[in-house]
Length: 357
Picture (cartoon, rainbow, N blue to C red):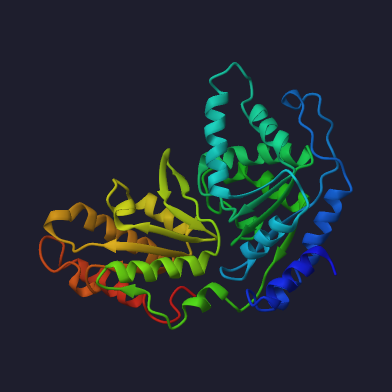
């Protein structure tokens, strides 16, 4: 039995997974990648790439499909069992934020092309990059990602990524998208693009028929929220920083499309529609805790909450939250209370069975 098939079978036998033919069909792709990587030398960096010999690239894997199909779970399993010493698993948003920061530092020095030292630093310590949720929404990322990945591929770095979009739909309708198209061609050439087409949404299934709105917010509901988040993520949940028009928006805990934040983390800060759209784009499930009673005393926070709910609603994000009161009693007096009725209605609708499908 192959390495990935053996690991997958062990998870099924332990009751952690249910055997799924769509998921099992992906396992040979991962085993092929392991074989190809073991049969070739490790990537080598040179002085800004001038003296490094380009290697015939190992074809990576681009897994795409709807949410909850098991893409991230399979990538995590692969990352765990792949016998590669220099490997990294990182959310794509977080990786690109690191790259942008590194470019900023590189530009302080006297280099003609800041991409070169940044790429060389990654190549020097990485043979395998596992990205969760590749998506391009920022013009700055769109303008650099092609040249960066061209150097990574040329140096022999293998890439595995998950995405909700087929490569051709990345950065769709984005500004100056014509400049981004060569990157799409690069993905098609250097990666095996595989769609996980399934009618089963395992993430949704865990919430099917379950309570998702808890009031009042107290010690008991916080404990329940912790349990739900742990069940949905099953692993480390570091913060996720989103770059939005030069600003940083942080989701305090995040894994595999599931985010967790307190009301103040998002609505207590001077964030706007673009920031909340980025949160909705990054999260397929958002666990939002400690929504307070709203009114005159926190009018600005209440307005941001309305904008956040609108963004989550339009993106059909599954919302799990704890609040001081039921939706229709959250905002009962003061300016904006009448307009809040629509938000209360949306909060009710978002509790319905099947929401987010």
